[in-house]
Length: 258
Image (cartoon, rainbow, N blue to C red; front, side, top):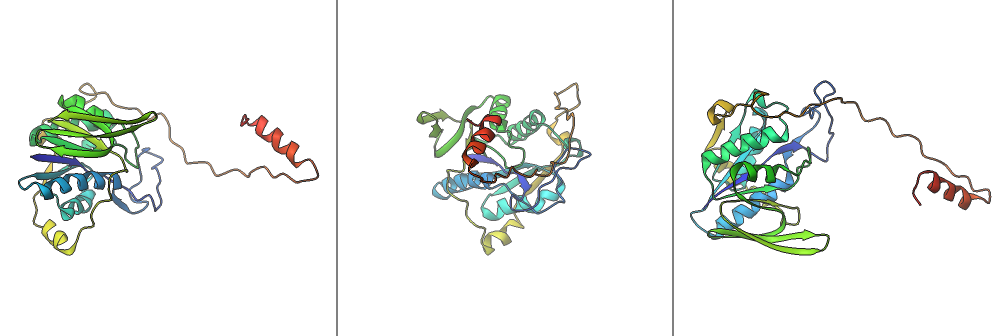
Protein backbone atom coordinates (compact mmCIF):
# COMPACT_ATOMS: atom_id res chain seq x y z
CA UNK A 1 0.00 0.00 0.00
CA UNK A 2 1.11 3.54 -0.73
CA UNK A 3 0.08 6.31 1.65
CA UNK A 4 0.53 10.03 1.06
CA UNK A 5 0.49 12.24 4.15
CA UNK A 6 -0.01 15.98 3.77
CA UNK A 7 2.40 17.85 6.06
CA UNK A 8 2.49 21.59 6.59
CA UNK A 9 4.98 24.05 8.02
CA UNK A 10 3.29 26.65 10.23
CA UNK A 11 4.35 29.43 12.62
CA UNK A 12 5.02 28.01 16.07
CA UNK A 13 1.94 28.60 18.24
CA UNK A 14 4.25 29.20 21.21
CA UNK A 15 5.97 32.09 19.45
CA UNK A 16 5.03 35.38 17.81
CA UNK A 17 2.59 35.16 14.91
CA UNK A 18 2.10 38.20 12.73
CA UNK A 19 0.66 39.18 9.37
CA UNK A 20 2.54 41.14 6.75
CA UNK A 21 0.42 44.29 6.58
CA UNK A 22 1.27 44.80 2.89
CA UNK A 23 0.45 41.33 1.59
CA UNK A 24 -1.89 39.99 4.28
CA UNK A 25 0.18 36.79 4.41
CA UNK A 26 1.75 35.24 7.49
CA UNK A 27 5.10 36.82 8.31
CA UNK A 28 7.29 33.71 8.42
CA UNK A 29 10.22 35.73 9.72
CA UNK A 30 8.37 36.86 12.84
CA UNK A 31 9.12 33.69 14.79
CA UNK A 32 9.97 30.01 14.64
CA UNK A 33 8.27 27.64 12.21
CA UNK A 34 7.45 23.98 12.85
CA UNK A 35 5.55 21.09 11.32
CA UNK A 36 1.91 21.47 12.27
CA UNK A 37 1.21 19.04 15.12
CA UNK A 38 -1.99 17.75 13.51
CA UNK A 39 -0.07 16.72 10.37
CA UNK A 40 2.50 14.96 12.56
CA UNK A 41 -0.34 12.93 14.10
CA UNK A 42 -1.58 12.01 10.61
CA UNK A 43 1.95 10.91 9.75
CA UNK A 44 2.08 8.86 12.95
CA UNK A 45 -1.10 7.02 11.91
CA UNK A 46 0.47 6.14 8.56
CA UNK A 47 3.78 5.07 10.12
CA UNK A 48 2.03 2.91 12.72
CA UNK A 49 0.28 1.03 9.91
CA UNK A 50 3.54 0.75 7.96
CA UNK A 51 5.36 -0.65 11.01
CA UNK A 52 2.84 -3.49 11.20
CA UNK A 53 2.57 -4.04 7.45
CA UNK A 54 5.90 -4.46 5.62
CA UNK A 55 5.84 -3.18 2.08
CA UNK A 56 3.81 -0.08 2.94
CA UNK A 57 5.28 3.10 1.47
CA UNK A 58 4.67 6.37 3.32
CA UNK A 59 5.30 9.60 1.39
CA UNK A 60 5.17 13.09 2.94
CA UNK A 61 3.69 15.74 0.63
CA UNK A 62 3.92 19.48 1.21
CA UNK A 63 3.25 22.66 -0.74
CA UNK A 64 5.47 25.26 0.89
CA UNK A 65 8.20 27.84 0.29
CA UNK A 66 11.73 26.63 -0.38
CA UNK A 67 12.63 27.51 3.21
CA UNK A 68 10.39 24.68 4.48
CA UNK A 69 12.87 21.96 3.48
CA UNK A 70 14.07 21.45 7.07
CA UNK A 71 10.52 20.86 8.30
CA UNK A 72 9.87 18.34 5.52
CA UNK A 73 13.10 16.58 6.43
CA UNK A 74 11.64 16.15 9.91
CA UNK A 75 8.85 14.07 8.39
CA UNK A 76 11.54 11.89 6.81
CA UNK A 77 13.36 11.64 10.13
CA UNK A 78 10.15 10.45 11.78
CA UNK A 79 9.99 7.57 9.32
CA UNK A 80 8.48 8.59 5.97
CA UNK A 81 10.21 6.76 3.11
CA UNK A 82 10.31 9.81 0.84
CA UNK A 83 8.90 13.30 0.43
CA UNK A 84 7.51 15.54 -2.28
CA UNK A 85 7.95 19.30 -1.92
CA UNK A 86 5.98 21.58 -4.23
CA UNK A 87 7.78 24.91 -4.60
CA UNK A 88 6.80 27.68 -7.00
CA UNK A 89 6.77 31.46 -6.66
CA UNK A 90 3.42 31.44 -8.47
CA UNK A 91 1.91 29.77 -5.42
CA UNK A 92 2.72 32.62 -3.07
CA UNK A 93 -0.55 33.59 -1.37
CA UNK A 94 -2.47 30.70 -2.98
CA UNK A 95 -6.04 30.31 -1.72
CA UNK A 96 -7.57 27.01 -0.62
CA UNK A 97 -9.03 26.30 -4.05
CA UNK A 98 -5.67 26.66 -5.76
CA UNK A 99 -3.92 24.71 -3.01
CA UNK A 100 -6.34 21.81 -3.38
CA UNK A 101 -5.92 21.72 -7.17
CA UNK A 102 -2.12 21.70 -6.93
CA UNK A 103 -2.01 19.05 -4.22
CA UNK A 104 -4.46 16.92 -6.20
CA UNK A 105 -2.14 17.06 -9.21
CA UNK A 106 0.75 15.84 -7.04
CA UNK A 107 -1.38 13.04 -5.59
CA UNK A 108 -2.44 11.88 -9.05
CA UNK A 109 1.19 11.82 -10.09
CA UNK A 110 2.12 9.62 -7.14
CA UNK A 111 -1.00 7.40 -7.37
CA UNK A 112 -1.33 6.49 -3.67
CA UNK A 113 -4.03 4.24 -2.24
CA UNK A 114 -4.70 6.55 0.70
CA UNK A 115 -4.19 10.23 1.56
CA UNK A 116 -3.98 11.18 5.24
CA UNK A 117 -4.09 14.73 6.55
CA UNK A 118 -5.07 16.81 9.53
CA UNK A 119 -8.55 18.26 9.62
CA UNK A 120 -7.54 21.83 10.51
CA UNK A 121 -4.21 23.66 10.35
CA UNK A 122 -3.18 26.04 13.11
CA UNK A 123 -2.42 28.93 10.75
CA UNK A 124 -5.15 29.19 8.11
CA UNK A 125 -7.69 27.03 9.97
CA UNK A 126 -9.76 26.65 6.79
CA UNK A 127 -10.85 23.09 7.54
CA UNK A 128 -12.10 22.43 3.99
CA UNK A 129 -8.98 21.25 2.17
CA UNK A 130 -9.48 17.49 2.73
CA UNK A 131 -12.98 17.62 1.21
CA UNK A 132 -11.81 19.78 -1.69
CA UNK A 133 -8.91 17.42 -2.35
CA UNK A 134 -11.23 14.40 -2.38
CA UNK A 135 -13.54 16.19 -4.83
CA UNK A 136 -10.66 16.91 -7.22
CA UNK A 137 -9.44 13.32 -7.04
CA UNK A 138 -12.82 11.61 -7.10
CA UNK A 139 -11.80 9.71 -3.95
CA UNK A 140 -14.05 8.71 -1.08
CA UNK A 141 -13.60 10.96 1.94
CA UNK A 142 -13.73 10.34 5.68
CA UNK A 143 -13.27 13.61 7.52
CA UNK A 144 -12.51 14.66 11.10
CA UNK A 145 -11.90 11.16 12.43
CA UNK A 146 -11.00 10.75 16.10
CA UNK A 147 -9.85 7.17 15.44
CA UNK A 148 -8.78 5.49 12.23
CA UNK A 149 -8.19 1.88 11.17
CA UNK A 150 -6.43 1.16 7.88
CA UNK A 151 -6.91 -2.23 6.23
CA UNK A 152 -6.01 -3.81 2.92
CA UNK A 153 -8.39 -2.14 0.47
CA UNK A 154 -10.41 -0.13 2.98
CA UNK A 155 -10.28 2.42 5.77
CA UNK A 156 -12.64 3.05 8.67
CA UNK A 157 -12.87 5.17 11.77
CA UNK A 158 -14.88 7.14 14.27
CA UNK A 159 -16.19 10.66 13.81
CA UNK A 160 -17.33 12.52 16.92
CA UNK A 161 -20.48 14.61 16.47
CA UNK A 162 -22.76 16.70 18.68
CA UNK A 163 -25.12 13.73 18.82
CA UNK A 164 -22.65 10.93 19.51
CA UNK A 165 -20.08 8.94 17.57
CA UNK A 166 -20.41 7.83 13.96
CA UNK A 167 -18.65 4.73 12.65
CA UNK A 168 -17.70 5.36 9.03
CA UNK A 169 -15.84 3.38 6.38
CA UNK A 170 -14.84 3.54 2.74
CA UNK A 171 -13.04 1.49 0.14
CA UNK A 172 -9.72 2.78 -1.17
CA UNK A 173 -8.65 5.09 -2.68
CA UNK A 174 -9.74 7.61 -0.07
CA UNK A 175 -8.86 10.89 1.61
CA UNK A 176 -8.94 10.77 5.41
CA UNK A 177 -8.55 13.72 7.77
CA UNK A 178 -7.90 13.20 11.47
CA UNK A 179 -8.33 15.28 14.60
CA UNK A 180 -6.03 15.88 17.56
CA UNK A 181 -7.72 12.96 19.34
CA UNK A 182 -5.25 10.63 17.62
CA UNK A 183 -2.01 9.70 19.46
CA UNK A 184 0.97 12.03 19.64
CA UNK A 185 3.59 11.62 16.95
CA UNK A 186 6.86 9.81 17.59
CA UNK A 187 9.97 11.90 18.16
CA UNK A 188 12.73 11.52 15.54
CA UNK A 189 15.73 9.68 16.98
CA UNK A 190 19.35 10.15 15.95
CA UNK A 191 19.24 7.22 13.54
CA UNK A 192 16.15 8.65 11.86
CA UNK A 193 17.68 12.11 11.58
CA UNK A 194 20.80 10.74 9.90
CA UNK A 195 18.77 8.48 7.59
CA UNK A 196 16.58 11.43 6.53
CA UNK A 197 19.57 13.09 4.87
CA UNK A 198 19.75 10.26 2.34
CA UNK A 199 16.04 9.73 1.73
CA UNK A 200 14.52 10.97 -1.56
CA UNK A 201 13.04 14.48 -1.42
CA UNK A 202 11.57 15.42 -4.80
CA UNK A 203 11.05 19.11 -5.52
CA UNK A 204 8.33 19.92 -8.05
CA UNK A 205 7.15 23.12 -9.71
CA UNK A 206 3.80 23.98 -11.24
CA UNK A 207 5.27 23.19 -14.65
CA UNK A 208 6.32 19.74 -13.44
CA UNK A 209 2.75 19.09 -12.33
CA UNK A 210 1.19 20.56 -15.48
CA UNK A 211 -0.97 22.94 -13.44
CA UNK A 212 -2.03 26.36 -14.72
CA UNK A 213 -3.16 28.71 -11.96
CA UNK A 214 -3.74 31.78 -14.11
CA UNK A 215 -6.84 33.75 -13.02
CA UNK A 216 -8.83 32.36 -15.92
CA UNK A 217 -7.89 28.79 -14.99
CA UNK A 218 -8.84 28.80 -11.30
CA UNK A 219 -10.78 31.17 -9.02
CA UNK A 220 -8.68 33.22 -6.65
CA UNK A 221 -9.60 34.62 -3.24
CA UNK A 222 -9.23 38.39 -2.98
CA UNK A 223 -7.97 40.13 0.14
CA UNK A 224 -9.98 43.32 0.63
CA UNK A 225 -8.09 44.74 3.62
CA UNK A 226 -5.62 43.92 6.36
CA UNK A 227 -4.89 45.76 9.59
CA UNK A 228 -2.95 45.22 12.77
CA UNK A 229 -4.91 43.84 15.69
CA UNK A 230 -6.06 46.80 17.85
CA UNK A 231 -4.71 46.97 21.40
CA UNK A 232 -6.95 45.66 24.13
CA UNK A 233 -9.18 48.33 25.64
CA UNK A 234 -9.40 48.83 29.36
CA UNK A 235 -12.18 46.90 31.05
CA UNK A 236 -15.03 48.31 33.12
CA UNK A 237 -14.20 48.69 36.80
CA UNK A 238 -17.04 48.37 39.27
CA UNK A 239 -16.61 50.03 42.63
CA UNK A 240 -18.81 48.52 45.29
CA UNK A 241 -20.69 51.21 47.17
CA UNK A 242 -23.57 48.95 48.01
CA UNK A 243 -24.85 48.77 44.45
CA UNK A 244 -22.23 46.49 42.83
CA UNK A 245 -24.83 43.83 42.00
CA UNK A 246 -27.03 46.35 40.22
CA UNK A 247 -24.07 47.73 38.28
CA UNK A 248 -23.08 44.23 37.24
CA UNK A 249 -26.60 43.44 36.05
CA UNK A 250 -26.71 46.70 34.07
CA UNK A 251 -23.37 45.85 32.44
CA UNK A 252 -24.56 42.37 31.44
CA UNK A 253 -27.81 43.76 30.02
CA UNK A 254 -26.05 46.51 28.05
CA UNK A 255 -23.70 43.95 26.49
CA UNK A 256 -26.54 41.48 25.81
CA UNK A 257 -24.97 38.84 28.00
CA UNK A 258 -28.23 38.01 29.76
